[in-house]
Image 1 (tube, rainbow, N blue to C red):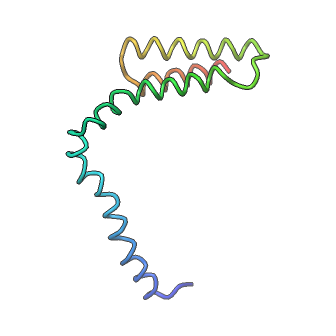
Image 2: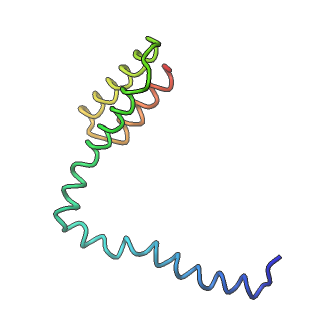
Length: 104
């Protein structure tokens, strides 16, 4: 078992580093909101994530089982419909994943 002084020393070093690393994003957040690159990435990221998930879903190694296609197409349709209707990426991905898991 480590000595109490050694444990205290590790905590004394780790605590400020952990705090600083967690506080850093909040200190630069205002500058990031104004940055043009961050605005573009924020606008394009949801569509990019959806595209990556779609390619991953529809391009598995084999499509031998028709039930897999039905689950994939149903999940894709639900995801696209919800994204078009509600414009909520989290809701669309969660609902599409749920449909796929229930049908698969």
